[in-house]
Length: 93
Image (cartoon, rainbow, N blue to C red; front, side):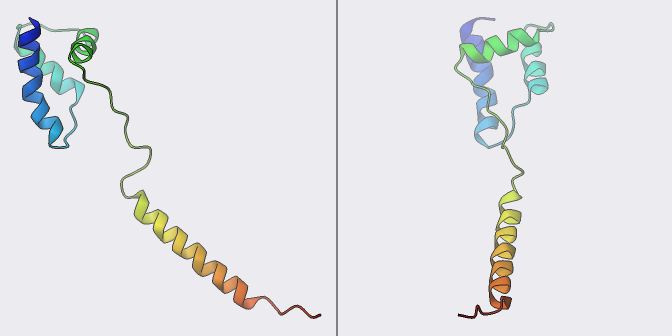
């Protein structure tokens, strides 16, 4: 495939990526293999993406809903701290 053919192929996949959907390697391989009519290696796919300036994005380090749980935990800690402070006996001089 020429560089221009590769660029056109990736342009069709760019719309999917810009919608916030994941671009999975298996799906990309199927699309790339349709053009020449034969299978391609994983190294070819990586080289193709690198040639056109695509980078590997790391997944989130936490679950997307972890922020809500973290807020609940922090609220519990604050509530717990206030309860323990209120129940401490007064110090005598």
